[in-house]
Image (cartoon, rainbow, N blue to C red):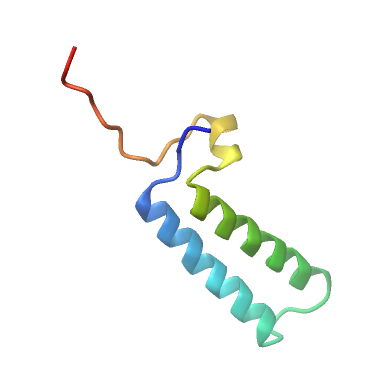
Amino acid sequence: MKKNVGGLDRIVRLVVTVVLVALSYFKVVEGNLETVFYVLAGIFVFTSLVNFCPLYTIFGLNTCKVKFDDKK
C-alpha cells in the first residue's frame, strides 16, 4: 500500500471527524444520518492513520509530498 494521504489532508480528515462525531453526539442529526456520520468518521480516522485512501487510488490523486532520490 503506497501512501497517498498527506499531512494537511490528514488534519482536515481528523477535523471533519470531530465535527461529524460532535453533530451526532449533540443530537443535531439522528437516525440513519447519524449512523452514516459515525461510519464516515471511522473511515476518515482509519485513512488518516494508515495514510492511504482507496478512493484516491481510483481517481489517481495523491496529496503526499513526493521525495526525489538524487542518487542515480
